[in-house]
Image (tube, rainbow over all chains, first blue to last red):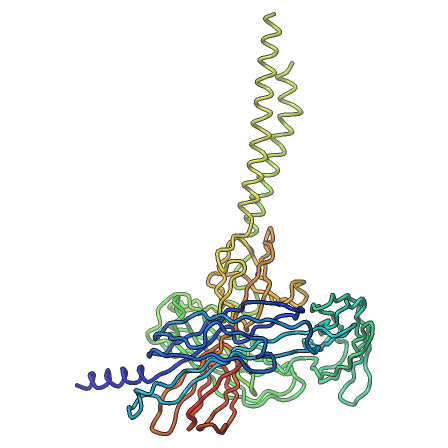
Length: 393
Length: 170
């Protein structure tokens, strides 16, 4: 009886779920005078009920959008492709012009008074049109991939040419300031060309020969006819905890095992309330065992042992994948290891050295390739310069 | 005449061996190059999907290199292994594999999907889930009046008393 009630509740819940979707959620095209184009959308009804939808065009480009059909019926758990045509004028205002195809479910009046969902869903597929500016015009951003102390920070400047002419020379000048606002370094990037309507990237690897801490980069991207000022803060030395070692003493399968995990704080400040979660998985990837450490505070640039206890009752001898995740602040860092479990020994693979020689197959192929080519060359040399001459005599 | 015929026959035999050797060597080289060429089983070139998790099935290669820029100026690099699954944001990607030989550059497109799921919680409240693959701006209406605008992350759910929900890429 209880099962029947649960089943009925389940069926009711499934039938009372509505869903409406559209893909792509955004279509981006470049403007061409007088362009006519057909764009397809897939409207998805992943709910458990048949629906009818109505389509309409909205936004500043609405007048250039023609919908092929305005009302469409979509059975439950099916999708339908709908098309719309765009018919652009000879000119549009430069910049990003937008329009929307609005897809709305038509409420079913037969459900009034019933317990089914009565709210209405609508989704929007956006149309983005890039209209080139007269002359030369660019936009840019600065992305900084942080560096370790004495490592390299990578500066990336994606440059988009929005003008009708190509940009022949785009480069960036960058000044780096420390937290006391003192300039610690400057550099100039190389120069690149960016064709009209395209996106290219300027890359610069900066040697972070500075102490660990936060820095500010002030950049000027200079292109043929203009300048773009950009500013970003970044860190040298990540606010990062790194798992360095796992020590296990007196392992005995079936018992509770103590794992001592050595963690290094690579940041210049204390990190509070860090803890480690370990998930052991079987071949199918299912978690067969999981355990957490207590929470610890780690002083800046120092190491701390985190203790975890693993109850190995029911665990069989074999090799297991293990995800060891360190949680701190709003971050986490995960290391994938292999636990080789035997009756009286636990071997942990993947810390400090390569888990397995993953290049082995490739190395074997190279050896085979070289051996066969050398053999071919020898056979040919032997034949053409020795045997052939002998036989000819 | 006899020695000349015999010499001609001998030369013919030598030429035949030359031919066999040259064709055999070339065939072996072609086979070898084919053998060490990366074998990309999935995804196909120009593959389009709205799934964010992409399974790469590749043999005879070591690394997968993927970037949203055809120049591969800031690529992500993955070691190829069985069941390599990579989660990607919607967008157009260029990718190639490297090993003894490199593959050509292939294109992969993750299409954005806007999808709202709605369920009735009680007489007044609805649960609204972002079931698509992009962050959504959801306008909530009660009748013709817009009462709220909520930003929903992928798979995030909210409760609302509205009766009309409009989802759009944020």
